[in-house]
Amino acid sequence: MGMQYDDAIAALVEKLKNDSTLAESAQKLTEADKIRCYDDKLPADLLSAAILDVEKRGWQYGWRSNKKMGFGHWNIVLSDSKVEREEVYHEVDDSIRALWDFIQPRFMPTTPVLVRAYANAHTFGVEGYVHRDSKFETDETCIIYYEPDWRAEWAGETAFFNEAQDDVIRAVLPKYGRMTIFPGNIRHVGRAVSRICPVARRVLVFKGRPK
Image (cartoon, rainbow, N blue to C red; front, side, top):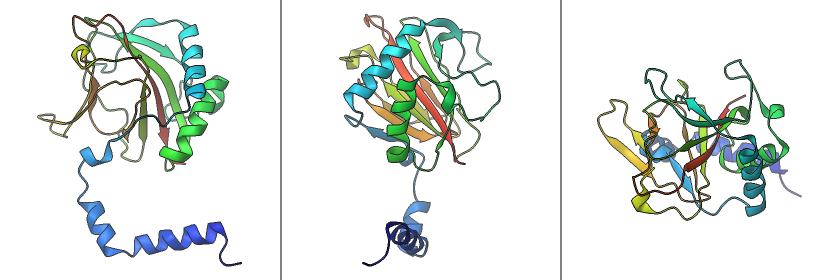
């Protein structure tokens, strides 16, 4: 019946390793190319169930994305491990786990180990600050925006920076259901919302690492 699925995948991987054209293209990838955005990919029932469980917990103010800055933002902790990069899969609620189980094999296949899960929110006057999520390029972060009907004039973009932090390499508007996945070592920030924004900029975040 021909090669089994695993054999076919192994053969494809080997071919890709030996494809000099592909290797050359990969070397030319910029940091901006590594930031992937997906719209309308998450099942509505899984996302809604996760959001419901997140919001039941209640927001706490004061979490700082950059510890060197003196101001924080709204936050909900969904995993409670005190050990850095320890797996937290069994610490999260069933709905959060179900959403991760959908996302990870489809969009984050190289980072199957869930090491953090939380939610952040910014209201007018609450700022984010430039930071990295990880010092490891092989780690990945997934941000899911979940405030409905977001408008461009409300601001609140996620801005990504080059290594020197002297230029923006990409900006992502926080549209409902949008998922942004990127290497954890890319510097970024959740920008503040504008004065006319009547709601909070709310996001659900997963962080994964390789085995």
